[in-house]
Image 1: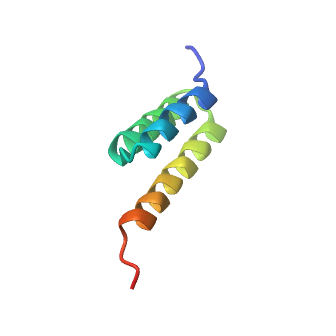
Image 2: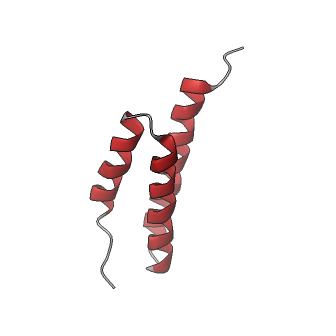
Amino acid sequence: MVSMDIETEQQRIAGFVEKGNFHAAINLAISAMNACRREHDQAGVDHFLTVIDDIVARMRERYGSRG
């Protein structure tokens, strides 16, 4: 099995976040996390869980109520 290039995947996800396509960004992050799970790469799983948290925080900043 070929190991995932986490940096490349991170850049792809960031590109979707910058465009405001949060749905695609989260889907890619979940897919990347699952790929890391299949490879028994716990550090990668943890990384992409943090990426998902960051995406949700961006959505909260952009769309959440402020009051």
